[in-house]
Every structure is written in structure tokens, then in C-alpha cells.
Length: 236
Image 1: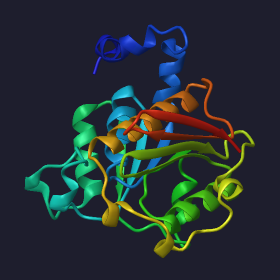
Image 2 (image 1 turned 90 degrees about the vertical axis):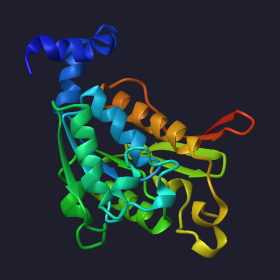
Image 3 (image 1 turned 135 degrees about the vertical axis):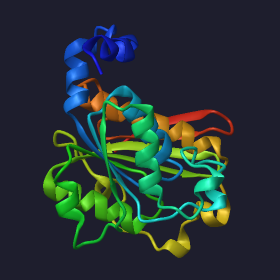
Image 4 (image 1 turned 180 degrees about the horizontal axis):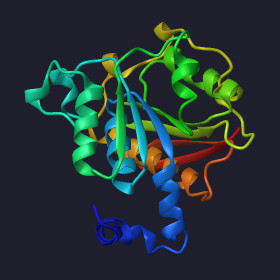
């Protein structure tokens, strides 16, 4: 693709004085790992890809199921049974052929977490369970990687940035992994399909701001109740 075509693709954001050509170059050089290509991961991947993040890792070991389709908008019914990471890679590569994407279809474990995460600048956690969230957090702390965190349930979502320029991490907010039996989840309690789109876009927005060195969340947790549009920002 020519320089002119690249200019035309990104000019609506590069015309912002806070971004410009220098900011677009930062996006082009950035390496972002998205863990989980589900409800949160799909909108995150779409928007960081179309913004021009140069190298995107997509990590998910799961396959597409019919109940995913009401909120995981990168997938179609024809793709049921296929690997999410592989289909997501294909989808975002079509959205923006200028970027490079890689699919990681293995499960994140204590054995492989460091080796995978160390290859990236920023990690965006769209996983759906506490065991993975704490493993991602602890690995990012150990490797000094910035982590964008999000979670959803029913009509409410949360978002924070951890371990960025010396900021606090997940364990400073919630020191211990909760017992899964004591915590509601989307599998048992449900989620409105548009909610992960809202929170995922917020996570993507924050990821882009971090790459661009724009003001980002700092020891702050956003709690967004979309049923009554109650927006709370807590300092921790």
C-alpha cells in the first residue's frame, strides 16, 4: 500500500494534534497482546487493528460456539467449531492489511506465560476467569509490562490500567484470587450483548492512549453500570 493510501486510511486520527504523524508511527511500532478473543477481545481487536497498531497477538485456545455469536462480533455461524484466534486473525487482517497479526491457540499457563508476554509492549486482558487474570497480572508485574484490565457482568463493566510507569496492579486492588463459587459469572448470570462492545471499546481506547503517551487511567478503577448509566471512578 502506498504512502498516500496509508495517509488516507489514518488521516482522521492523524489530524488530531495529540496524534499526528509521530503518533501514528508509535502505533505502527507497537506490539499489543490481546488475551481472550471473546466478548471483550472482539471489539478490542477490531479497533486497535483499524487504528494501525502494527503487531497484534491474539491468544485464545477456545473454539466458536453458537452462544458466542450474540456478542462476539468477529464470528459468523459458518465458523462455529473453528479456533477463535485463527478466525479473529483472519478478520482483523481483512480490516487492515497494513498490520501484522499472530494467532496463539494455546492456553496461558504458568509454564508459557512469561515466554509469550515478554514479546509485547502492552497486554490487554479480555479473559473471563480469575485464574487467568491473576496469572496475566503477576506475569506483567514480573516482566514490567503495562496491563489493560476489563471485566463484564450483566449490565456492568470495569476497566483499569495496571503496572504502567510504576502504577499499582491487580493485587493492590484485590489481593487474593476469589473463590469462583463466590463470584457470579456470565455463564451463569448472563450479559447483554452490547455491554462487552462498550467496555471492549473503552479498553481499546485506553490501549491506544497508552501507546500514544496520552493521559491514561492511573491507580483508578472505572465501574460503569450501563443499565442506569452510572459511571464511577474509584482511586486505589
